[in-house]
Length: 79
Image (cartoon, rainbow, N blue to C red; front, side, top):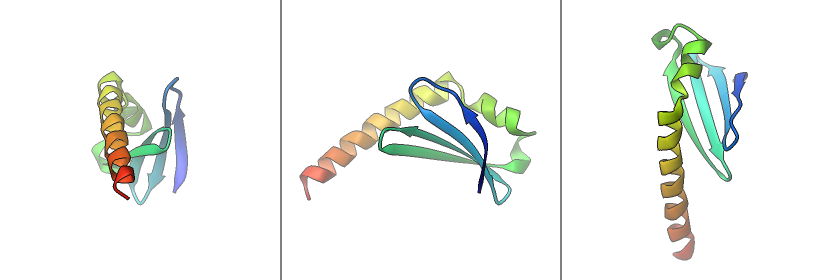
């Protein structure tokens, strides 16, 4: 697996990897991360993948990160 791009963002660490004919977009916020896999054949290249990382995707990712944190805090309290 190799990093093919870093996408600058003030809040997230966003990296694009290429592995087994798939692009993987990893979005990190604190201790949580989300990974999206896209087959190489479904896009025309790295620029397509970068365009997919848009404001709507990142807003939805933030919503998921908040849900993940809530789920983790609940699980942690039940340990």
